[in-house]
Image (cartoon, rainbow over all chains, first blue to last red; front, side, top):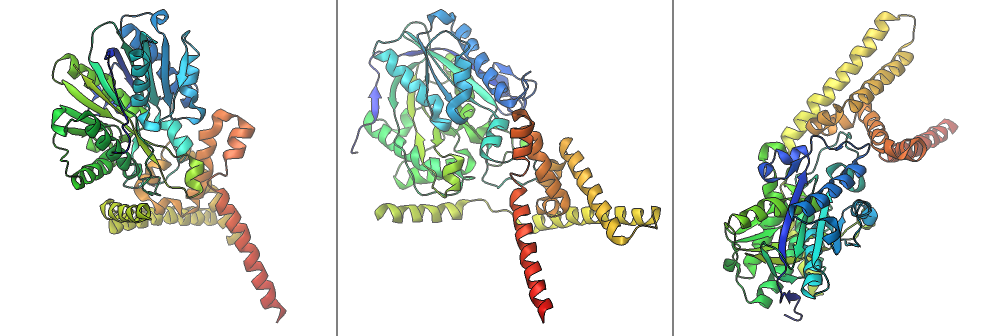
Length: 331
Length: 151
């Protein structure tokens, strides 16, 4: 391996609070009962979907601060991002709070990216409590990346459904909760995939790269983790990752799962599954955290992937680069 | 060079892995729904001719198109047309109702950006190319027609 991308945490920051809010369709999915709040409709009482996404993030942030039994004045910094142009949802959501805000963009890998940055800030002794958050909204994403909602077109079989939801967590040096023991920042990997409706394939290459790097740096094996969780590779993308790892002689066994693939029930008609920054953010900050508290999970490799394209790059015929950031959470 | 070969190989592998759309059921569904829309148009046309015997066939066709455009627009607003489209595919895109849907849907979607920059600007984002190609091809056909007329 030419470069070690993994940072080992010396003080091991803890995840002391978590919160997930989702839309109605997501609430009916496989993880419905784990979410903290399910919205009654996609507007969330606002006049536009963009404002709804913003409000969703705001309530995730205030929700997680009270879940961590803190008050906003205890928060040193917030790290977060979203999918909209100029990350307006998280920046505008941050406007409602007094603490400093670091906006990051890692497409659908933003949850792990912000948690990794947050962990480093705490591990370096610069901060005590860091809020990490991200979210996405089906209707705003469709509008930015694809077609109007009411257009009578068919979705290609490889397409995925952007999750309406936001997830947030509080990282801290004090308090109780699972620890972050290491983080691996990913390289941008582009294996020449052109199809914007097949982002799973583009991101699987990035997931392979980060996973190989992480396993080598930490001298761990796939079997050392109770769960290896990718973000939104979807049904197709996660099968591709399994194949890619197989070529490397690594068997991603029963302990591997993909949030996007598992998110919805088959009859919900989401084709290759869920996607979006909110996809892994809501599952990690509800289901995974709950299983940690129950003691059912002891060591998890959380590695969401992001497709770093824009509508301009894809219209100009560019390929789709992917990135994958990984964090290890253990009890 | 090695990267290029790997990328080509990867793309080939992905192509073999991608789930394909089943052609026959899709074609059948678009045929049925598309046919029903045409049948509806013919019905409206016949009713107009029956109710107003004094108007010409050409005007009746124009009124039929207006009715179909109106209906599709209304159904788009009620969130029905995209459901039809999800089922029918090309069957509901090709008739003029699909064109109506492609103009109404961005108008609804971008209402939040205001009347000028939202509705008016975005109205033709999907239908625009259709109009451009329609105008260009009609000019081409007109030229051919004119050239033929010279002889």
